[in-house]
Image 1 (tube, rainbow, N blue to C red):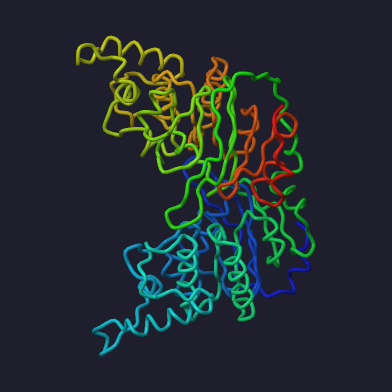
Image 2 (cartoon, rainbow, N blue to C red):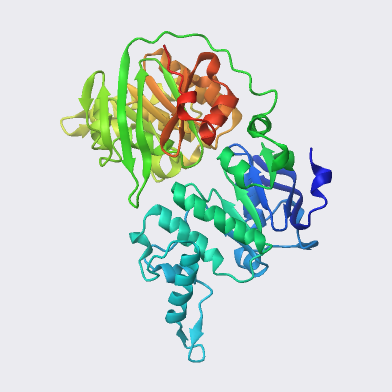
Length: 521
């Protein structure tokens, strides 16, 4: 590690020592050390799955470490839960908003720390409103404290989330997880001024962000995790953006995976200026345009909240309110319903197979044919013979380990369940397969099977759009890669330009979009 000696002169406010977190089949953190310096912005960064969120959950009392210890003020502490952590002055601002949409701004800010009057028999709502107004003015957002939170824009809701923490008088450590992800440029400037104020009061900030230029601007110290390990730490003054990227992806991992060159001529899908607005303001998908060819695997990479899932959902007809033009085999279509898209030749493998891809109470067989039942009907009756032929074929072709298709779907492993979801899509005879994190939560052997299936489908002429968070996987399987950040297309890479360094840089928004768009010939 570099910079250790220079950091020792600063006062350590909080520290993780040799912290490990083991889940069944996964080591999320492996002997990680993390120092939090008093009155400083302590940046924590890493790729998706590096272990950042797990470490923050442990330091906020949400999770317990499998081994190691947390030090606070030089003394070991056991943070049993978030209330316990809060009592010790530790606050967290989650990226995913943790608000009650049916309550007012003031009620959200003072939830669980209400002030009372008349001997404690009634809430002092007037005091809540007065203090809320003062906090919001400090945040340069003088909104009405009595406004119902669901009526606010997303950026305003993020300000309320920040204000919840600001209402506390005993704050020592504040964890900020992607706090600028929903904020406008002006709101980001307000947040940065707030951070400077917190630092001047001796409050320590743990700051998680993938926006590299942002980190360089406000960070004091940086710690980088990769695959659950601590790989680098230093003062921000000593490093630059290439240093961050190099340590995030690994010195020996930026080489491009050499793939067999493919020629694509027939366009199967074209998307022009696709835009999906957020209900409270801003966009999930912001003016995205691209094309897909028959037999092509088009990878989509981006960080949490980039808009990848929403893009696939829009193409599948889950967001009919989206604007823009979609052309299927040269013919303009409107993605207004899922069933209509299935009929046109779209199949969707959702990110959450348990909630969105499978019906837990049904058998393996029934789950597999659920989207294609009309293919097995004769005179209003379901032909089990036809249905069983398709089921047997899919089990064989997809290497599904299922002793009996009549068994409950939950009797299968995660990898085999995922293959059932893929089989369900294939039985609709698709032209385009939309695959959202198809290898998430499955073992190494099942991952290899899934990507073998992807390659086979592409060789049969299907156009495939595949979202993946693992850099190695998306580089290995994709013919071309689009990168999204904040709903926008920030990079397009093909051939030797598909490298971990390029993808990380584009996903961070650390370079101008035009510099990262490399169109295929």
